[in-house]
Amino acid sequence: MAINKNVTAKTVDEYLLQFPENVKEVLEKLRKTIKAAAPKAEEIISYAMPAYKYNGVLVYFAGYKNHIGFYGTPSGHEAFEKELSIYKSGKGSVQFPLDKPLPLSLVTKIVKYRVAENAKKAKIKSATINNKK
Image 1: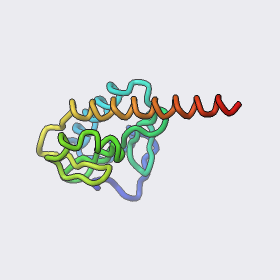
Image 2: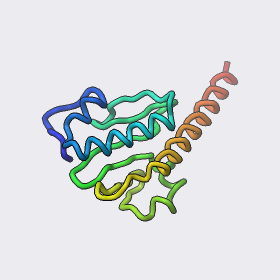
Image 3: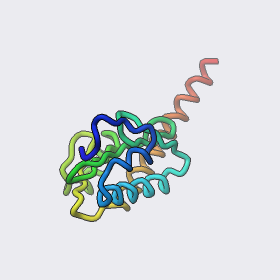
Image 4: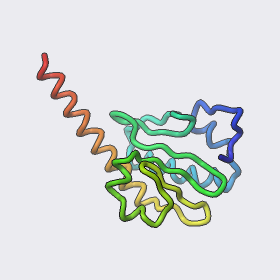
């Protein structure tokens, strides 16, 4: 990671300040895209990286020397497996190279998918709780 490992950011703004300007610029674009796709989401730091929470965590991201890590949880990545197949990825993570444009429209789709998924889970949970009363 391209950040000072001795500093733990408490806010996303603090997190972004730890990066060189070229990486910070890309991270800021990603941040704005996520916030636009999930305007009601709370921006937090979780696992030492930016995260967005709405009825549970939606997505995370992290900056590295040569790529941006994007974590849409396994379900978010499974739903867009074909589109993400051109990137290096894991079960719930994908690496967007810094020398290529960010796929912001794809990020928007993943975030909106996760918002709908979390809203559905919250609705089911609420219905279950109400039925037990």
